[in-house]
Length: 316
Figure 1: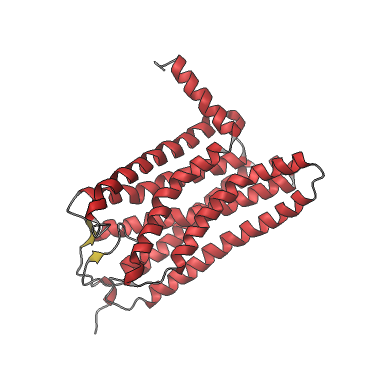
Figure 2: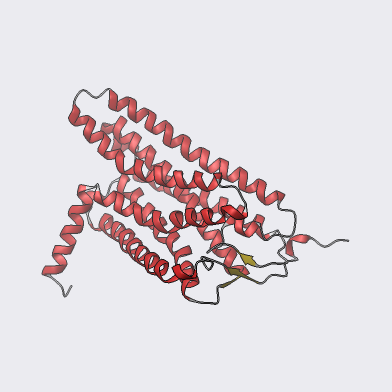
C-alpha cells in the first residue's frame, strides 16, 4: 500500500529570500518599513482608543471601524516583523509550523477584513437610505452578529486553505522566493499534486471576493440613487462625506487584491508579487487609520482633546 503523500514532508524549515537579491536596498527598506510599521501600530491603536473613550463615537459605523483597525493591527503584526527580520539578519529561516501559522493568521485576517468592508458598506447604505431608522435597523445585537459572522467566515476560509496546504508534501527545495509565507510561494514548493489546494483557493477566492463586492456594489448603487434624489446640495455633501473614506479604503484594498489575482505565476513576476504584497500587508494597514482620521471631524477632535488632556495632566 502506498502511504498517503500528505504527511510525508521531509522539509522542517523554509528559507525566506525576501529582498536579498537587492543587498544595497536592505538598510533603506528596513528603515522605511520600520517607520511604516510604527505609524501603523500607533494609528490603528489610536483609532481603537478614540472610539472607546468618546461616547459620541459609540455608533455602528465606529464600532465597525474599530474592528477594521483591530484587523489591520493584527494583520500587520503577522508579516511585518518577519519582513524586518529578513532585512537585517542572515538567517532567514522559518519553521514549517511557523510558516503555516503565519499563512493561517494572515489569510484569516485578510478575508475577515474583506467581509468587514462589505459590512461597513451595508452600514453606510442604511445610514444614507434610511437615516430615521438607522439606530433601530443597526441594533447592537445585529452589529455584534455581523462582526462575529465576518470573523467566523474568515477563520473557516483560512482553516480550509491551510488544511489544503498541510495535505501537500514538501520534499525540497525549501527556499521561498518571498518575505513571508504567501500562498502561491508555498504552493510552488509542493512536490505532490496541488489540485485540491488550487481548487480550494479558487473557490474560496471567488466566494469571498464576489460576496464582498456584490454587497458593496449593491449598497452603493442604492446610496447613489438616494443621493441623486436629495433636493439640497448640503444633504448631498453630507451623504457623500459619510461614504468617501469607506470608498477610498475599499478601492485601495480590492484594487490590490485584484492585482495580485491577475499577476501570472512566473519567475519574472515574483518581484511584482512581492511589491504588491508589501503594499497589501505593510502599507494598507497604515493607510486605513489615516484615511478615516484625516477625513473625520469627530476622530480629529477626540485625538486633539486626548493630547491636550495629557499635556495638562502628564502624571495621569
